[in-house]
Image 1 (cartoon, rainbow, N blue to C red):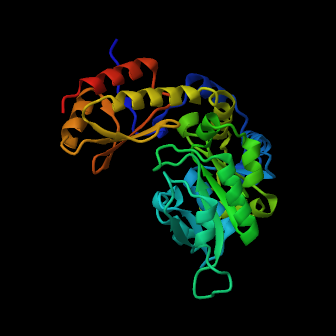
Image 2 (cartoon, rainbow, N blue to C red):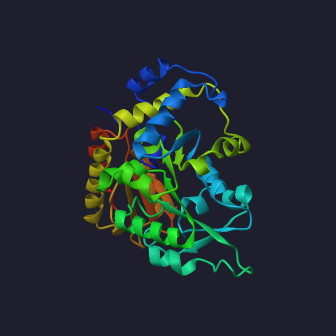
Image 3 (cartoon, helix red, strand yellow):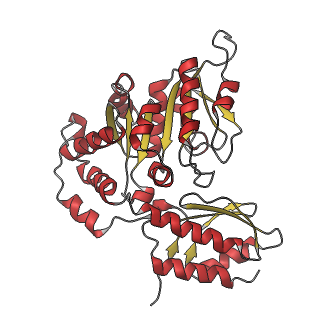
Length: 344
């Protein structure tokens, strides 16, 4: 049987399943700007209850949800703390400064993760008016540039303790949060007790076509509708898309382990190949690896392309593979064989 294109550039490339589309078509909809879309309201209630948070709001994208959260926590001229690889710093178009007038204090963490001691070290003294006032800490779980690494619960609790002591807000960018929840032994409610706000992406591994839910404490979330409107995120009959997100949460969480298992199998295969220099630890569905210096990247990329395979070339010999809902067992077997047959 001929295998179609195997696209492993990202888990954002997934398409809705036939079951998701059938569910979507039967969703009841209304005007969400008036908060009259029953399916969007149902999704928001579901996620708020799941995480034990006060309130939730559906956003079209994860970047918008993160940007809204930062706006809710900060005032212009202030500063947030995040890892040097954080998505809010690297991949949201400079929105931290553009939307909120806030600067980022970058921490040299481990695979995109930072510790409580590192946070404490870089907080600006609140009475030193020459430096920006530190008001927010942003964590990312799993980490994108960190290769799908997951925070431990105790590390997040320790960061929370520092935030409480220093009167800082704490936001979690949960773009692949359910991958972390699958890999670790904590629950959504555990995270709801630690963070002030959490963005939960419904696409990527969960397979919805779009959407992120921002959950948080009421004193912050009461302003979220206004901020979403300012950012251009007011939507009308969004229940069809929100319904896809609800279906994903109710049907696609358990299957994330399959993505993790395939990723670990790919990682193990790569470690045994003579043209591979290094494979970073693989915890979830992202594999980061490096070609040996003498291997021609263009030849490798061309070889994959001829075999109908796409992965991400991150430059300087660094590559990324991301497993996902649309990566079948047959594709997996084919990809493994293709990797083994490359001649550097």
